[in-house]
Length: 211
Length: 127
Image: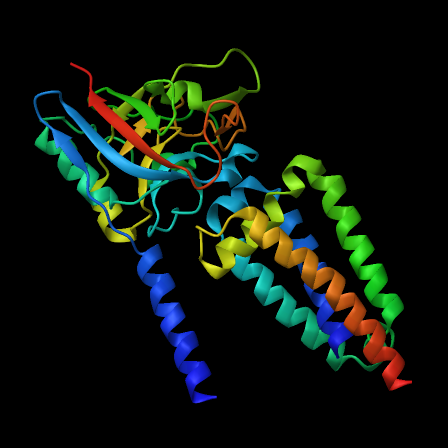
């Protein structure tokens, strides 16, 4: 019995060690780009979410189309290292807006995001990997900004890298949809199963500072 | 007792899926933990309430629970999401995001089928 318990404990430690794999961001100052190792979460290829990328250990780690294997704080620091300027204009109070008309759009330096994975057809724009279903009107291209939110991220650790609306939690969020858009169900987002690889696939998320 | 646990498991999965359909709730709560908590609560409720225990402890009740839960989930999710959502709820609950959905689905089907067989044979043995 003791041997069996020991074997189970050993197995748990081994599984935890594998699952707790920590990688690092690649920062290229010359190109003005950051490469983030991540994995696809198949759940959000078939159901809605407001998160494109979150750190797997954060509160929203399992609530995102992709889970990053590196902390969102490192992402904030990497963007600062590239010289990007944060907007820091969205507060938790802004998140209570009941519609986009009442809401506020994020400010901050503009970012472009691409994905690659083994077998991908070059760099795939994040825009192609996310489906936005708009209640009235047409889909809007992602307008990702360096929102900032470092204080919130450090205090509450939601793990949010890229939110698909303007948000008080994400390091980078989407100016195309002001706060209140999701509360009012004006838009919903999910991963594009026709573009993204299957659940669990390792992807590189490439974030570039648009100059 | 096994029948009560089986019913609790099946109905908790249906309730968790129904909660999953509310995006606001799904974005804020670990529904995997809710699923396990609901299983425990429903199990205790069935054991605590005497008339409920008498009915829920039967093979018929387990069949009804299994069919009701499966049909409810299928109606709400459809076939494509049926293969992903219940497995994702369990995966979130056990905090093992790297286990493939197919492996969790196999385990869930095994629990559903073997569980029903165990309820049937333990019920017969009891009589």
